[in-house]
Length: 82
Image (cartoon, rainbow, N blue to C red):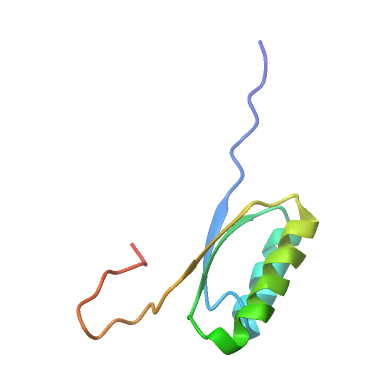
């Protein structure tokens, strides 16, 4: 019988492109956890977001998926944290 490997876990990190969220994303990726990153849309920081994504991709033991959005929507908009 062939052993099937366990699926790799995913972590959803809010604020994944700066501060504690960035540090957490990078550390979990180093440990082989796939990262679903959520970052707030600020054009001024987009270059850094790309750097963080590249750093995680360089680890390549992890997969990434990133979305841009505001997690706290006071206008009744779509909830990205479901």
